[in-house]
Amino acid sequence: MAETYDVVIIGGGPGGYNCAIRAGQLGLKVACIEMRGTLGGTCLNVGCIPSKALLHASHLFSAAQNEFASLGIKTGKVELDLTQMMAQKSDAVDGLTKGIEFLFKKNKVDYVKGKGKILSKGKVEVTDADGKKQVLETKNIVIATGSEPATLPGIEIDEERVVSNTGALSLKAVPKKLVLIGAGVIGLEMGSVWARLGSEVTVVEYLDRILPPADAEVAKEAERAFKKQGLSFKLGTKVTGIEKTKTKLKVAVEPAKGGAGETLDADIVIVAIGRKPYTEGLGLENVGGKTDKRGVIEVTDHFKVADGVWAVGDCIPGPMLAHKAEDDGTAVAELIAGKAGHVNYDLVPSVVYTSPEIAWVGKNEEELKAAGIDYKKGKFPFMANSRARTNHETVGFVKILAEKGTDRILGAHMIGVGVGEMIAEVCVAMEFGAASEDIARTSHAHPTLSEAIRQAAMGVEGWTMQM
Image (cartoon, rainbow, N blue to C red; front, side, top):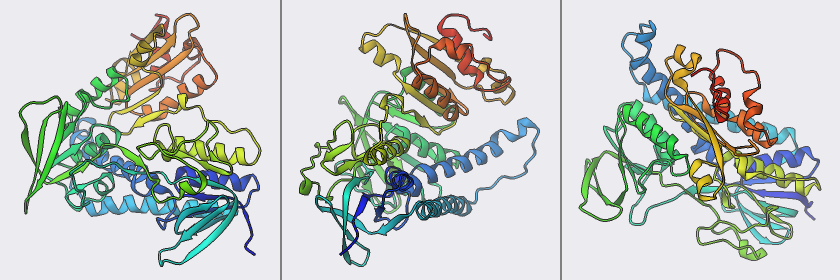
């Protein structure tokens, strides 16, 4: 008779593999099922990691062309080797996926390749690439199947000329004209990469602003910065169809609120309108699990789908972010082991890895106003920060929002070089219920970009000193 696992996890992405590792650390017998053939999920294979590899490389390429000379660095002729740029991206991905396999071995996690389906409580069927099936028996099932790119009705994604964010990471040549559908995080990152490498990028967004989840003031500053980098925007505009000719794509667009349309020429179209949970064919009905109309799995506030069945990451409510999935997975492993597991979704930071970077945590001004919460704010521009001035990286600002009366920090919103790293300071402060004065009176090394956070915190009480 087959040995029973304590935990069987369906999905080897950030939620699944972190759940598996933590469960292994806690002494549980664990198996993790992954159908991709490599661990790491969308994030590591075709999302966060490869996109950051291309963002970094394309940023250096652009800097060598446009910025080095002003710093006294003579580079000669700078040429793009797209094949090598893609190769170094793949090397980074390969190394990290192998790293997860090592961590599985270290923590005694069984890695099972194939597609998982729930047969009943305590039973998961795995079908491998050759169609061979096996059944794993377990005390607990954790669903960590993640998400997949959302699609537009009537738009066929062929991953050659009309591509998702996955295909956008592997283009074989730099398109002369690129139309990007969606001005969210994924779209702006991919648009930045190809604009730096030479594409004429037009971003089409249904809403009347970019980055809908971000603070409005930050979004406006970002739009100005991206326009200076050569991206053009058609906001409040919808795509109604794409015609494929032998050599070109004809993208039909029209105002979202009605009006005369137009046609945009493109060599490549990237569809980046978000993601949807990957939950079809999972066998949820066999344990009484339910999803909403978008495919999001219904769970309790402790990640439970049913008795002995849990779910984490992109396939449940909450932000679709790798680090949120990691926290979910860790919390569930601890709950299964009889410990306390919890994730504070109010303090999950968001980062856009463009240049400048954009980062935020907590509530923005629009949300506070809508909720009728009295707040005060401090704002400090990088133009007044000595390190930013020295580095010629002065675009952007830091904004701190705090509650009137208590001074408790309610949110932080940043745009500038390196803010993706800097946001963690505010996350820690907010986790411990800090006031803006706590940051304002904490010594920060000089000269550093992080001093902008301190100066913004000073500004909440009106005593900014460096401006």
